[in-house]
Amino acid sequence: MTITRAHQPVVAPSVRTRTTLAHPTLLLVGIVLVALNMRACLAAISPMVGEVQRTFGLSATASGMITTVPVLFQGLGAPLTPRLTRRFGAERVVLGAVLLLGAGVLLRVLPSVAALYAGCMVIGVAIAILNVSMPGLVKREFPDRAATMTGVYSTTMLVGATLAAGVSVPLEKVLGGGWQASLGAWSLLAVVAAVAWLPQVLKSGQEKAAVAAAPAGRPVEGIWRSPLAWQISLFMGISSLLVYTLVAWMPTILVDHGMDRGKAGLVFAFFNLVQVAGAFLIPLAAGRMTRQRGLAVTMVALNAAGITVLLLAPVSGAWVAAAVLGVAQGGSLGLALAFIVLRSGSAAGAAQLGGMSQAVGYLVAAAGPVGAGALHQATGGWNLPLTLLLAFSGVAAVAGWGAGRNRTV
Image (tube, rainbow, N blue to C red; front, side, top):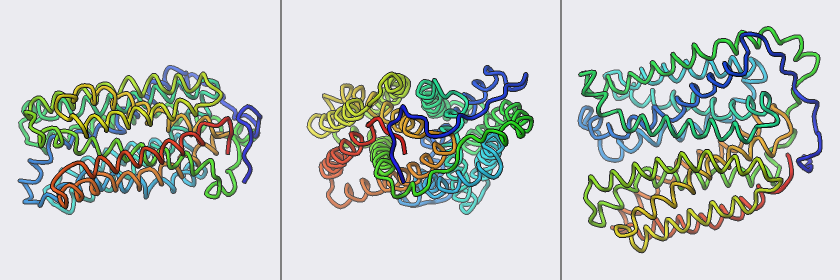
């Protein structure tokens, strides 16, 4: 396992033979539509959890697993993806994952508790495959604009999540089929994305000879022993833990401190909206830097500042906390994804690094909402969970400082 300076060429460049079907505009449209699916089906169920709980008579813990299971299976599915992409090609793997995601969305709304959780598992695996495949595709197709394109698709993911959370309840009323119709409708978005992605699959079949003549890079040996890879993985893991914990509990924290539920919902919506700006702007800034250490530490510091406001003045400082945390958490997500393409020397390396960092990241993140809820139940308050989030922020700052060096795995 060697670490090289990022500006040194470590592999032969990938070959990208454009055809009519593979026009860059079609590729961009395909990436955007795929990215819209990558968080929408997770966010869509959040406003519906209460109805799902009543339909099946679930306990509070069992209801919490509806959102935890997909995150857990994102971590479990991530390491499998680099092997799939090497065998079948990234384009085919992305198409298969989008179709699998649509199938998981439909499975989740069948009238069975077993189907509900099975659908959550399938959705988690499908998203894991997309999470890992996309950085490699971006690295290969946009080698000179990888950070910019990372900003585009990370922003699109959050836009999809924000729209899904906002329209799920109105969609339930429009369709008239209860929560099942509202959640099942998101499978149509997966079908649209699959159709838009088909030209890339056809293109990949036409490029086999060219790719064989000039491969896109060999896998990185010993990546799990790389300190740099672990630093990126820990930065992604703790950043994701902070995101998922606050997404799960921020409205409850505000309400428990006396805020009206309606106002808490508005603050939470604003928090999600600001994340979109952070997810777009921070990767753009990262792509213009040779080292991103200061940027990583700044994101962690903003996270810590927002958590501190929630700890000390949760109601009076709610809007400030939402603004600061929105920039920090959207920016941390975009920066973690940017690290995957900036710290790898090839598309194959990006897929491997993405597999490792997201396996570690989502397994760590899955513990956040459950752990915070358990600590709240044990202590009767939110001080201990929020204090622990501050402690984790310190670890993320150290990991981000290492991940931001001008090196590649």
